[in-house]
Image (cartoon, rainbow, N blue to C red):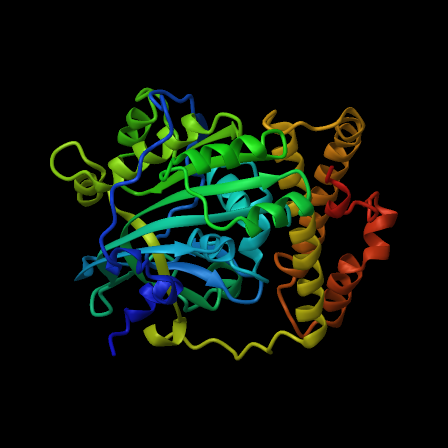
Length: 416
């Protein structure tokens, strides 16, 4: 088995099988879907994945670029995967790993984090994401021609500077994610919608139009697209403004008029399917990026480091508690955003609650980010009892409350 087979693992179980079904008449789109005005989400803020860059497996953070090779070993690997991903799978594909330090970055306000948050959604939403994952090649260090930027000999703080692992291999290619989700006023509305069976913006029959009208004010549509690699100016052009540097675009539509969101999805589908000059597919070869990377212990390159103690159960539990709290707060923030979009008939009393909750949830997220640093960045030695205790204390809800954390917020209260 190829050592690079893991690149396909996140979506191997989610390959789209719909194209293998029997033939059917082409669907009819909603009437007059000619235009839409999507919002840019901003450029991608992900850090470059440099070969030879150090990584600390305990704090789960990148370190300095400590070694490079005169030439990069390239292994051609032309692969394309098309699949429907769940919200958690999208977050993983974008680098926000559950229970890992990287997941806490999903609370940021950059385009990658915002798209992942929309994909994760909340209990009042139904959604799915179509993902196109392209790998052109795998790259790695040439272990026979290394140039040490920070030699391991004679440096007392080498472990701190370079970590215990390094970026050994990476996959180069591109990704395109297209999100389609429906937000509901209440769980009752969601259950009623689900009981009526499947519904698509593409299959616009009189029955579909009647169903949408019946949920006007009680349901809304959100669509979004996010691109990693390739020329994102092409995506901006497809969204209507080629001058905007944005890796992602989004649009909210009331259920009474979902036509703009249907137009958005058709434009994204055409963008993904296009071939030849000026297409996203062709631009991948001109501007591929690292979509996945593989760590390796420095021992592979002959660096002898002392064995590091395993992360203890108390730290694992504390990290899990923080991850669970963060997930809850992200769901609340996502729900507030859906209610603020202006596409649902939100009662005045609930709008007043949003005014109070919005700053409170942002404060909660900030406090959780601070607490996570004690369980990741500051935790340099998992055998240090003081560092472990500081992590445990920071993760306790009682400690967070004393710092201003509001533990009374519950997404279940945000329905009408």
